[in-house]
Each structure stands twice: as C-alpha cells, then as structure tokens.
Amino acid sequence: MKRFEASTGIKCAVLVLPDMTESESGGDSMMAAVLDVLPHGRPGDDRPQHQKEPLAYALDIDEFYIYELQLDDKDVDIAFGDRVDLTEFGRVTEVEFEDIPSGARSELDYAVEEIVEANEQRFVDFYNDAQPITLRLHQLNLLPGIGKKLRNTILDERKRKPFQSFEDLEERVSGLHSPKETLVERILEELQDDDLKYRLFVRREEQSS
Image 1 (tube, rainbow, N blue to C red):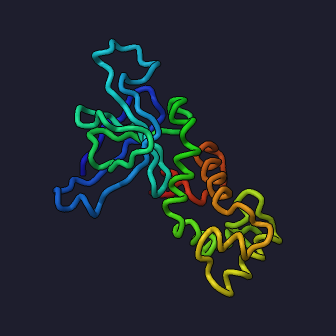
Image 2 (image 1 turned 135 degrees about the vertical axis):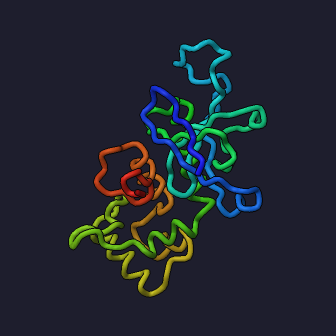
C-alpha cells in the first residue's frame, strides 16, 4: 500500500491507495471531477512562493469525497471540469468542504449536477432501490420535497415497473417535477453539513471503515 502524506494545518484524512502496476491501474482507477486549480498554492499559505506546491481540488465521482491533489509538471494542463484518476497523483488528501477554497465551492453545484447527469441510470436506480431506514422513515423521505404521499406514489410506481430515466420518473410520478435536481440538492446538503444523521450519497470515514 502507498500512503500519501497529508497537508499541514487542514482538517483532513490521508488517502491510502494500493500500489499498482501499469496493467492493473485501469481496473482500480478512482475517478474525480476537478473543481479548482491553484497553480501558486493556497492564498493563505505564508511560505515563500518557491516552497508552495501547485494544487487542485477534485470531487470523487463514486462517493463524493473532496480531495486536495498536489500537482507536478505533467499536470499543468489540468482545468476545472476535467476527469482525473486519483491514483496518478503523488499526494492525495481528503479535505472537508469547509477547507476548500472559494473557487472550488462555487463550482461544486455544477460538478455534482454533471456527475448526476453523466451517471443517470445509477441515480435513477436510487429511486428504484431506496429502502426503509426505520419503521417510520424511508430513504426517499430524506430527499428534499418528498413526503409520505409522494414517497408512496414512487413505491407504487416502481412495483409496476422500474424507472428507466429521470424523464420517466417525472411522467409517472405526479408531483415529482425535478428528480435530478432533487438528488443534486441532497448531495450538496450532505457535502456541506457534517451533522446530518443519515447519508445517502456522501460517504464519511466512519461509514466506510
């Protein structure tokens, strides 16, 4: 296993990635969407400029972790919106939402929406597969605007036939006007609020240990 050192002064977790041969890396890639690039390092870093590392911030596509990436010369062309493989960087540090720069924060909505759009079936299947959490609370109820009546309509419709797309959801579930935007809103809430009791999309260290 290869352990990547963490940045100092930031609330973070160190990402541990497996050592991989070139032939293995294709199957074990960890893809992320670039949120922001800081070619001159963090603005609040008081070290001399020659000691500052160029950085990028990226959002994991699978579990929505936010990572700080240390860049080197081969990474000069990285830009917002790019998809990158986290296993190709020398240092990858998980950071909290509160620790990312303003540029990355401002692009987070767009990045999450792009991920949901690009993986439509995966997120449509949430509506198909969502389960009860307790006797009184269902995973669907954690989505903004979905109460008991709308939840029951979704459950009834998916029994008849699984939903095929966001458009299919809108057509078959009266009152569910923006199924994609509803998921995006929930994902953003989970990214920004550390105190949520239940999480559907954004993993936390204690959940994945």
